[in-house]
Length: 89
Length: 231
Image (cartoon, rainbow over all chains, first blue to last red; front, side, top):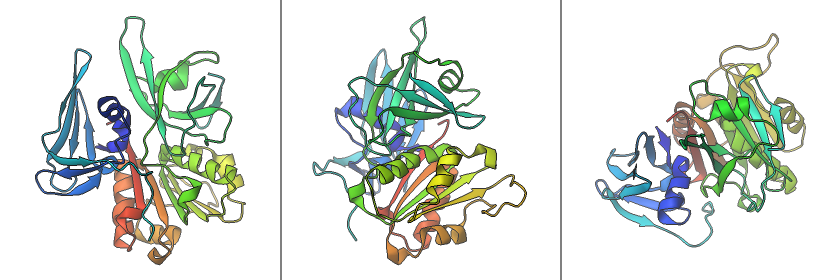
């Protein structure tokens, strides 16, 4: 098991921009986490799961040069245009 | 490819001259794509080992004997060869001088690579943010960037500690165990300092570090992780 950092290139290809700093919300349990922190399983396809409930959030399968994308398990993918920073404590 | 540097028996640094390179941020990676004569393609992601300020792009590759890409990069690649790169990639596991600190860097094995880019950036940017690096390796011979890290350890404000989990040289003064809560408390300092923590290594190393840091009172929002491994 890896994390969303490992598929930053694939996500850029699919979404056309840096996506690992987006936050994803799980449609099953509502957990919110940066895409970089989601659980990623690499195989013939790529499966992204929620760390809390294991729900499949995103799946990517390359078929004849096209990446098929299933985002069914994701309630929201939120993108913030402001430069990504640590929150100041 | 400009030059190769032997780091350890299993790792090599590849120094590249990249035309039209977009300056990267410390901690980012690139995808390297190899194409065989029959058109078969294999792609892997490698962390950038050099600072944005460095003149050339450097990758450090650990040779995995059953790998598809690393045996070529760390074994057969020769000076003057060309590589197909995509990047820089990733906006999450990055540190910039403006983020401040204190900075805590936790490396498991070749997870030290993006953290070395952060250390180099820290130095090149003249940052005064205090840094504490813990590097866990199996043996002293497995320590990548050993001389550079030993030199950096003499700089004021930079603390570098090693833990050797399998074999220790005679008279070894450093740590000699896998990371645990007590070790992390010594390296990261009190949670009230609210350090920015970057953890990179194999999944088990990262999970242990992140879980124990949170147990020590560090806020998850201040801990950034990157896991790597075969898959």
